[in-house]
Structures are given as structure tokens and as C-alpha cells.
Image (cartoon, rainbow, N blue to C red; front, side, top):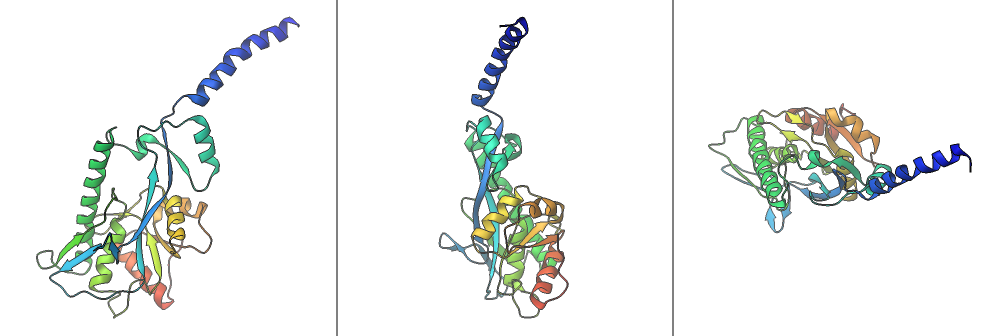
Length: 259
């Protein structure tokens, strides 16, 4: 063996060792998958998702589905092969663990944080919907109930559900037009819709559960288009009012925004 070959062989040993170590060392990532969806106009675990008192409500048809993702837990060991596999699959996403679990490390801390975010999301969704309809929270009481779901990303769909139950499209029709409409997005009390993350996985969850229309925060259009399921129509939104107008136009054949 030449001296050059011996040098290369010696150098290769630590490189191989490094690669083996990297392959089996835990990495700071989580792997996410399409999660559950729920029709906010219907029931969850035998209870209405939206209960309204102090105002007349409508019987609705069609569906407004909130969407979610599920991810490996904060203590899960994710290794290089998991990351490589996730990069090449459309039904998985590899995400920095801190992006999925930004607060705390224990399951209890994370559950508490997510529950708090969900409660705030429900409160702002109620404020946004009642404000859109020029109704007072003193007169109209809204209770939102959705088990085993945390985080703020259902805000838009909660707000749309409240609007549909109270007013529909304002002309006696359902906002959904009888369709199965899904979506995601945070919402502020004044009706602004914000980005959420994990949109490609959420469109897959929506498609799996029969949705044909997906409302997406406008800043996440490109991400949503990249892995859009066949037959799914994307509608970009920036505000609650814009989402309501888009659904009205969809039902009547009007001009509907697209990504």
C-alpha cells in the first residue's frame, strides 16, 4: 500500500466514525404528520363545538373543518435516518423541535401552554365574529368546546362557524354553500388572520376527511401549493371579512381569490 493510500485509510476511520455517530445521535427535530380535523358546525364527543345563547341561531348544512397536525413529543429521539426519510415524504415534515414546542420541555408544560393558546384563540374568535356582525358580547354568549386540541390555529374556523350559525351569508344561505370547507389560521379580535405553519400537512388532513376547499393565510399560499392534494381548491385570506366574502362568492359563482 502506498503512503498516500495509507494516509487516506487512516483519515477515513474518523470520518466513518463521525458518520456512524451522527446516524445514531438524537437530533433537535420533531417529525409532524397530518392530524385530526373537526367540523366546528357539528359536535365533538357528543357536545356541540359552538353553543350560542342570547341570539337566534340557524340550522346549517355543509362543514367548516378546523385542521391540525400531530408531532413526535419533546422527549422523542429523532435520528438522522428519520430526518432524511421525512424530507422525502409528503405525509411527514421534519421541523425544528423549538418551532413545534417553543415553551417548556415537559409534556405537562406543553399541554398547559397549548390549552392556554386554544382558550385565547376561542376568545378572540368570538370577539372577531361578533364584531363582524355588529353584535355585543354583553348580549350574545358563545361557548366553544373542542377536546384534545391545543394551540391558536383554529381561530379563523371558529370565527367562521360563529358567523355561519348566527347569520350565514346574510341572505338566508349557508356560508359553506353545502360544501365541506376546511382551513387554518390564527385570528385577532379585530379579524386579522395570521399564519400558522404545517399547512401542507393540514391540507392532507382536510383532503382525507372529505374537504374540497381550503382557506389558507395568504402568506402561506406558496407552501400550501407545493404539496396540494388533487381536487383541493385554495382560497387565500387575510381577514375574517375577506374569508366571508370569498365563501359567498364561491357559492354564487363570483370572483374568488386564489393562491
